Image (tube, rainbow, N blue to C red; front, side, top):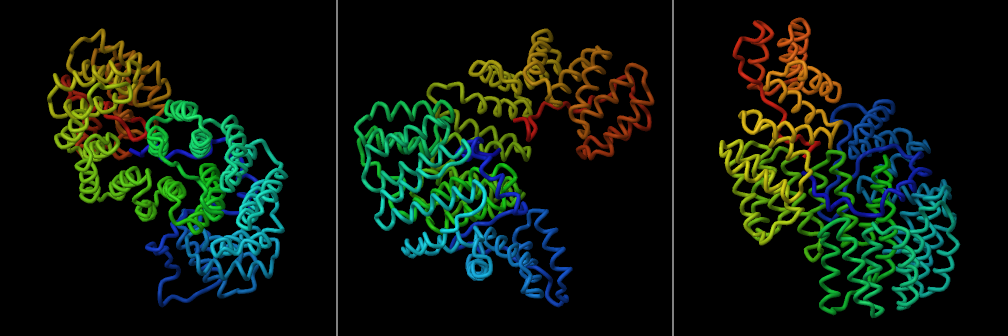
Length: 591
């Protein structure tokens, strides 16, 4: 289970920002730049000869498989063999930067800027180095050529504006921001950073107008919401600030950043600025753009922006979380763990980051480390239901149902009055109890889950099928499964449950109809193909039945199901066959 609270940032309207520049960079993985992180670079094995073609082709292959560390190493080798090749120089630089090899990338950036004065990414990195050192005038000079395309122009313009702000030239910075014209998605970035620059300069009332415009443009952007609420409170409108936070809470409940801001506002505590320094402001530019384009096939360029953001501001928790999220999506869980461990202890995102660390250990098939990590989090705060759910789900995924039941119960016991958002805890505990043959308690949990959230297709499916399987309350059970299919008509697993329920009720023609549809939706699922084979046999379509069973065998069924399938291929169904398992356990993509 991935923590949904990591899915914050500027929303999908801003994803178009990456189209112009992403086309010049190949998609690859990414890695963190933290003091304790060693970028993963191996390249050609020791003792083997280096060749231009071998290193180049290996680098391309590594990039295509999102192995950014090896891609950077192999292209670096190719550059050693052919040092005058401008393409190899460009690719090696970008890959080194995206991979977090900052020292090597800086050397290449200086070389690129000499040979290609308009190289946008090289100029951006050199400007970031100047910003870090407080050389604001030099940073502006590095970005004077800007860049081609909407994204490059926006990034150069906003970082240049922060360089001017660093020199104390607030009016010039704001004038530069006001001249940034582009696609509609520019608006939220331009108004947000105009507000941050004004806020940084102590112009709180002027900043409020820009934050309000940014908020009007995108009410779902976490950073904009946070800045607008802070600005409202800072300008004396506490009630309006709390309303803005409450409205966002309805979109994404209990986000830790929003909770932290709300707590300070309610207590009339000093809130502070998002951008206390020009460096943090520039880092915010790079984070916002990197997070926005990282979900639209621009992972490599997103990694470049996020690496530079963290380089400017080592405490940039949102940039670290965004970079870790990129790792998660690419299956680079070890790198994600390293980045998440760098989230500062004082950050409101720290606990969510630690939960994700535990989940990533599980993704790496390190159950003991995952379990110990999550158990420590739950022990420190049993009321943290995200930690409880993560622990329970990890244990349940390994069929440790008794331990998972205990974890869910520990969390449920901290809830005084269950609300709609708590339906999953009862649902998951119900699964554990059903698997532990505690059907009475399991049914009670499923019904409590439906009481909290009446139209949850996963619960309707699981409870409905479980009742059919036991021959209980058949009319109600079938209605539940039909409702689940109505709510998720394209979910092959739920359609399979309806077909298998018909099969168990002896309605074989109806079963064939639904199971054929389920196979169309999930053709690679061995259980669904096995079910369809059984249904075909019952309606005397024997050749088709054996074809489906053979297909189920070849799709890699569970070890305990394979002997049953092989027996059916050999002998067909007996008069009283042992029923195959049904698809009622929630799948990774469905629950």
